[in-house]
Amino acid sequence: MRDSICFSINGQSHEVKGDKVFMTLSDYLRYDQNMPGTKVVCAEGDCGACTVLVGSVRDLNSGKIKYRSINSCISFLYTLDLHSIVTIEGIEDSELHPVQESMRVNHGAQCGYCTPGFVCAMAGMTDTLIREKKPLETKRSMNYLTGNLCRCTGYEPIIKACETLDLKKITPLYERYHDQKMIDQYTELSKQDVRISTQTRELRLPATEEGALKIKSAEVRITSGATDLGVLVNKGKLEQQKVACFNNVSDFYKIEKIGREYHVGAKVTWTALEEAIEKDLPEYADMIKIFASPQIKNQGTLIGNIANASPIADGIPYLMVNDSRLILASKNGEREVETKNFFKGYKQLDLQSDEIIKKVILPVPDKDVWTKLYKVSLRRDMDISAVTFAGTINVVKDKINSVQLALGGVGPIVLRLPKTEAALIGKDFSREEFFKARDILITEITPISDIRGSREFRLQVAKNLLMKFHDELAKEKLSQEVEVRL
Ligand SMILES: Cc1cc2nc3c(=O)[nH]c(=O)nc-3n(C[C@H](O)[C@H](O)[C@H](O)COP(=O)(O)OP(=O)(O)OC[C@H]3O[C@@H](n4cnc5c(N)ncnc54)[C@H](O)[C@@H]3O)c2cc1C
Ligand code: FES
Ligand code: FES
Image (cartoon, rainbow, N blue to C red; front, side, top):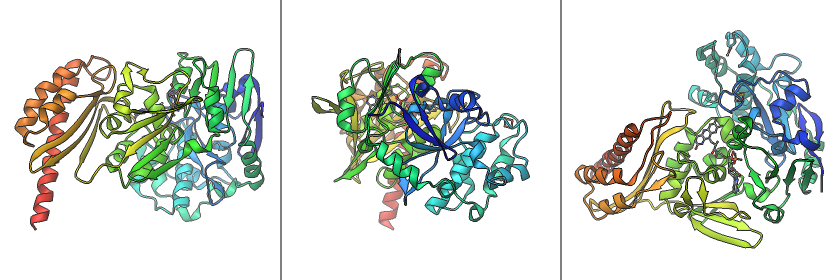
């Protein structure tokens, strides 16, 4: 049993005990380690000023650390046990890193407050592209920067600094910071449980699933990627008293394809999920592309999104219509629930206080099932949804054989629409029938007005999305029929 956590920062080893393990990484860097290069602006994961790179010994590529960008302002130190961290101070070598040089040459900084975050995000991008042998393309580089805001320079010079990089001239951080001794040491340490008790708080980092299940109780709050919880703690809305974090339980990171189903573990991040399901569940993978930012997706998990149970969670609507199931586990055993039955009311779940969500099972739909997922938000990237929609449908000889519909942002939970579905089943796949179904749909939802949209706006959007679902499918169906005839 360990009573401390360990990690390295820019190649220097750190061991932390006591209440300090509950600090955010950005506070630890700035106020404990006198490393103010990492900036904090929003402290909510929104602006990317605090971006640093982290990699874990649990996730190696050819024996080397895979560095990914995260927001250090919402990352508690204990979530980084056995990680290698690279901050802006560690990006520069004997001379400026090519990313820093490119920002200088292209005039990518005015006040410079956002610059360390952009530089770290770009350095993380170059590491990933070099490792995955992918070329640097404008669209890809813009996607990597969706989590970084700049208030004064404007994005053109920053994007230019990014897209004019020459990957061949960059030595990746996974080579520069490779330290076999540290990897071996951390791999050994990962086999030990961590328990840190202070006067007011307790942290548990179990090393195995069995250990994880033993410690879960009503008082113990699970922290996963902390992209929801970190914001709550920073806003003073949540105190961390008894915390369990499963970062060292390697089985929880597994994504397995068993038959025609994906089994997704409790610690699978959005980034890992997107990579795994791209071919079999393209619509869900496309939704993940516009989910938050790379920094958030590198930390946040699908199961955290489900357990947080927000009515506007982007991960949930598809799970409500694709026959997905959840495996809930406690020290007394496991049980399975259908995701569509898991949400009982606003933030109320069919989950006992000693249970955790261990897995999500995502079936791959049959070829004759059409899927559409929509997210309506004020801007495309990095925004919270106002309304979400998921629909799957099977049409046989122009008749609707089966249909599943779900809407988010129009009630206390993401809602299935049984009456609208019943009204469509057996009917012609036609605009007229969908028009009629719209009138039933509005009787099944109870949107409210808030900062993201009025009740009337949401009702209208919900009706429009049902029609969009029909119209897009009708167009695709027609073009398929033309293809077959040709
Ligand atoms: C800037 C920003 C942008 C965001 N953008 C989006 C977005 O576009 N769409 C969207 O839907 N969300 C978004 N989010 C919300 C958040 O990123 C997601 O909900 C994420 O999936 C949460 O996962 P996590 O691992 O970080 O959860 P955590 O914050 O660690 O935990 C969330 C909740 O889940 C519980 N929990 C975690 N694991 C388990 C488990 N195994 N069993 C039981 N309970 C568990 C925790 O106790 C907690 O109550 C955003 C957040 C931020 C800060
Ligand atoms: S300070 Fe804005 S994302 Fe961390
Ligand atoms: S250079 Fe000032 S915020 Fe970006």
